[in-house]
Image (cartoon, rainbow over all chains, first blue to last red; front, top):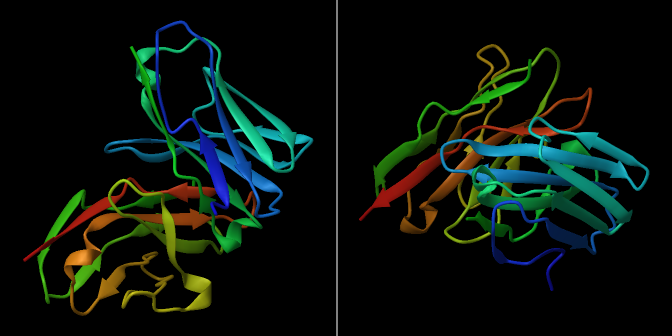
Length: 112
Length: 109
């Protein structure tokens, strides 16, 4: 039973299309995060949320938006996908920052 | 500014040899330091936190505040240690975690 579930696992989309990546968790954590992973660049923070009414930009939020529908759900949207958004996207949750994160399995997104 | 530096992109070590993955950080305060591991085609997993002073899978890491380092060590490498390793920092001010760019550890038979 996955604690943090991401859907879809893989997605290929065309330039200009809108796409949503979804994340749900059963950890009961208030804090949720979206990162993208690129070879040689590590993980970079896109958006994060400390509770349902709190949304914050990370270091690379341009071109992305998020929605925190409930404590357990945090979605990432690409309003108009472009090829350099091709990456592996991870959702994570935490109790607090000092407890570390629990990661989802990732969504591999390819924009053609 | 917060920063985590992992100077090695790739580290190749023979099975049975000691392993040291380097991590240096920059933070004006008292950070929490972590090591995460990502095995091939799997999610990132928390390997250890400096605050808990644990030893996981034979790995240890000591926080050296003078040198602002948090190097990951293992006395005898095993083939199953081959993976991507990320050093990470959480600041007390905003509680986000900042990751280094990662080091790929390759254990040679």
